[in-house]
Amino acid sequence: MFRSILDPDVRVLLPDGTSRRLIDYLLPSALMMLAALLLSISIFLPYWSFKMNAPQYPKGLRVDVFVTHLAGDVEETDALNHYLGMPPLNDGGQLERSISALAITSMGLLLVASVFVHNRWAALLSIPVVAYPLVFLADLYLILYRYGHSIDPNSALGGAIEPFTPPLFGEGKIGQFGTLAAAEPGLYLAVLASVVILIGLYFHRAAYRPIVEARRRLAAERAAA
Image (cartoon, rainbow, N blue to C red; front, side, top):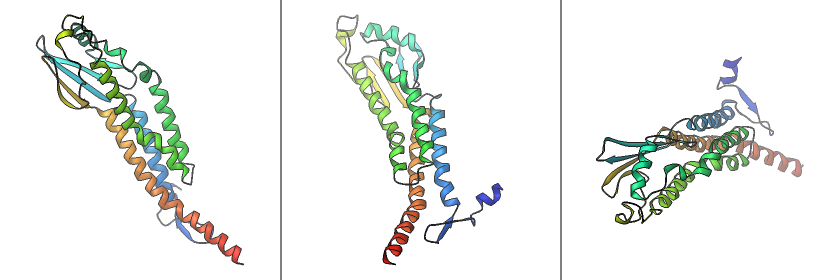
């Protein structure tokens, strides 16, 4: 049965009597389902990491940012940042972390729903997921900006540090401390999901546009008759 379904020679009859391969319609649906799976898996992986090299920590301090929580040397980093006059790490992005799992699950369901949409509305349902990685990075940048511009000048070392914005990626410097920020597997999966969606939308249009055109031709022929 499955062999017959996946056989490239299996045809689907269009309204005007022409036919196309069944695989042309299965492929975009499979790609949308794959994108939903990738997005779901990304919830359980870190999206971004931040490492600080401090003299009193020879191995450095590393914090992994998941969409739902922070992991790693959070307490140690907070203790060090306290002397620099910076707020605790968990103060940033609390709202985002509280709704992220539900939001990502909802986007995955939208992708699943798009499988059953055979017109241009499929692209509209996919827009939130395609834009998601950019939205995540933009929000992260705003959190980092607020973080670096919330220094308490009355703290032990706060008066010696100018307001700053930690880099999204690459090396940076906070006072005498070096930093290194990098994307992690969760973010890569979210970006891959966006790419898969764009490919899926291409094949979706290639598959279902002939149906729309066939209906128009049939309507025109009936009107002419």
